[in-house]
Length: 128
Image (cartoon, rainbow, N blue to C red; front, side):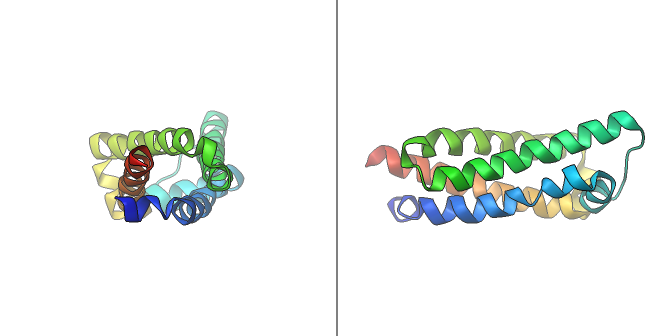
């Protein structure tokens, strides 16, 4: 874990940049839903919720990038964004297994990897 924790900055930067790409859902909500889940939602409420979802995920990505350069907040950022990723994973596994054949399946796999790496960074930092 010490080996991973020494790589906290690049882990946060790469994860942050990938997570930040979900700003796409705030800009093109229907296209993002179609790509991620293979379905769309309609109506003004769907637009608000999907755009907000995309913006919140992008904010998590921005937090990871910012935290990569500010060691004092890395733990808080890793826990907050890692927690958010765990909730997404759990929700898709509980309610949306049918979406696993779309980009949601790839997102679940990547998010699980990031959560494991975030945990290793946190454990390694605690030991130091």
